[in-house]
Length: 98
Image: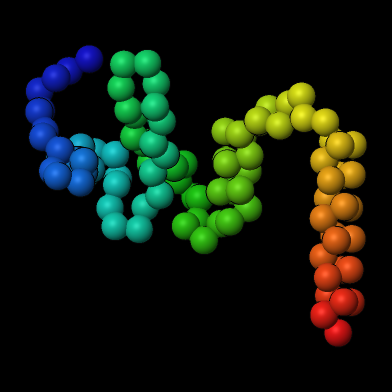
């Protein structure tokens, strides 16, 4: 790992990526970057070329990939039961309000 550039975060915790690195990686205004926290540091890389900034499907799949397994072990039947109870209570309140 080369440590030839040192930066200091501002009061908001922001750090500027030096111009030479942005140019080398093709990072410019409007380019989406992937920020990953790994042991020992934060890694920033531009998303693959050809990925449009408006490609919401790609972004959604990226987010789903990062959160895979987040709901593992949830009791789906209990969640569905609770959802139905909340919906029925809301419907009853609406009827009573009329």
